[in-house]
Length: 153
Ligand SMILES: [Zn+2]
Image (cartoon, rainbow, N blue to C red; front, top):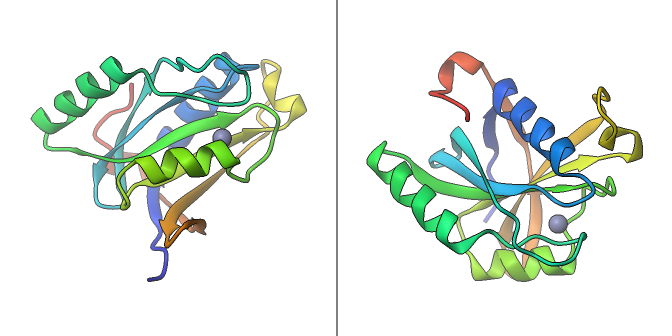
């Protein structure tokens, strides 16, 4: 199976980078909501992990966000989190987390470089991965116009 692309708007990308910066040096995390590989909305959830180099989605927040999405006709299509250390590669903990989730989900990493964690910097990069067999394989990200996005919060 080849990894298909994830479609994401500039608006969503800006939101993710902004939240990643706000959370640094901790990792920000949340859900990608949409239809198949189109991201229509994103939500941020509390990171309940203890360490700085990992994330655990707040379980109650996850349930609330998934139910709210369903009411709006959207599905959870993936998980996003940030890497304040600038690495675009998934960690061993990320892989373990991905294996606990739905196989079809996309896993977006927002990498801030060292300069990117200071306010005003625009240096950040996004990568998306999907599970293919036992591994996370990078998938292309296609930018779509923000008008195709219902809302971002
Ligand atoms: Zn990670």
